[in-house]
Image (cartoon, rainbow, N blue to C red; front, side):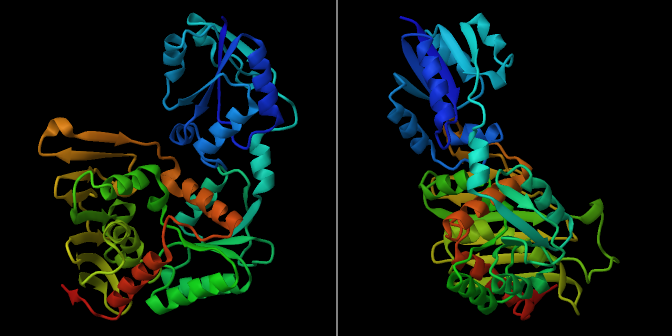
Length: 424
């Protein structure tokens, strides 16, 4: 019996996929189809898949062409599979010609011509064409624009504040302008992804979400950390009970612009610490321990009292059965690590935790420790764009950051601006 193996993503299974599977089947007696997992696809740059792994498996199974289906989960697995399954022929589309020649050492390699004029990428682009304009021209806005080119079906245009020719708006203006900018975009019938905080008061933030719902528009926070694979897995591990009951969440978020102190600089155009780092700092606290807490203590060092520019702020939260603390700063520096303390163990995320592709679960018995590694491209921004585009397509607000969490962030920042804190 001649065994044949081929691999693919098979997103939005189409005629080209089927023709390739048919040709692969004709090469032997038994066809094994390897379908790439979601996480492995991310490592290969495929971050905008329309279907889940199980949906793609079921689609291939429904063709009746695969005698066996396996999941490809890591680089180098092809060699392991060929040896383990006693494969005679490895085959793949001709657009990979030459790339897999190294497998000739283990079996015969055959490159098959692809069906012309059809591809999953083209189908995704056609299905989900989303034109995004921007408001704000800082460094974070430039990063967002750069990352859009990696997402199929998303197109950027420089609208110069004119919203007529866009479907959605990315807002990265000064936080004091967010409420007005978001409101204007929603009134124009545009979907919005806004750098957090969406507004500087709980009431204003709630008002904007209500306006978005009433117009069937998507409004979501652009906190890039929320969309990274490692962070999502971290939340899942922490909530699963792996480290027991969560007792404390503690971390640091700091940055010094241009590698030096910002003392003496013109602060009026810059984001203060509470707006620049506060939303990222609050995110794991609110997502792990809930949106409601018994008390919040804010301690800040102001560099400019007239514009409430805090160079350093410490946030201390008390919940029913847990506590949390965060140090955030634009004029101070510390190790940006995160520790989630549990009754059975703890999760450690090294600096900078908000860009992590790696974390550890640690226990008293170190032989039980486990390390987790995940691909992170574009600091999480491109995943954020994919999630936003999908939310727009489905007309459902993003589940990565709940509305209540966004409003809670605005409410805590409102507490800072109201002076309900301690100054040092």
